[in-house]
Image (cartoon, rainbow, N blue to C red; front, side, top):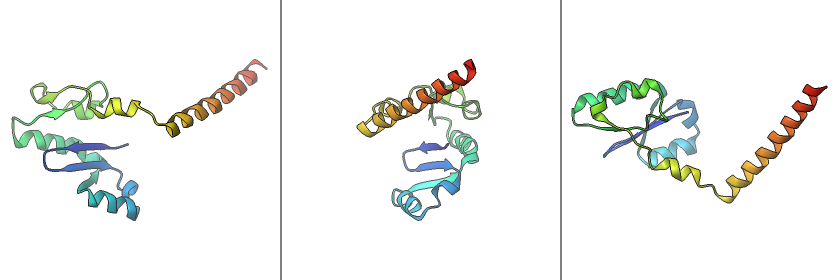
Length: 120
């Protein structure tokens, strides 16, 4: 699980730093000028962003965000809308669709096995 913030001049990834320890991952993020910070810093950084200028806004989909983040954003500074990435994630390629099919087959077999066990 992670958060990302994108401003006019920087991109910050908030995650468990162990997730980005592999050299190739760290090198890729560094080459893209992505700043990596601890997961728990996101709320304080959002507050700092808002405090630095009263006209600053935060684009956040309140229906998909957690309370810890959404509670620190005043209504006047909130742009509550779905972000553009969400619909893109709904479009699956052939490999992703095949993976879902396989997962459904495995899940169906597990459910049938459980129901048979439950009945006997």
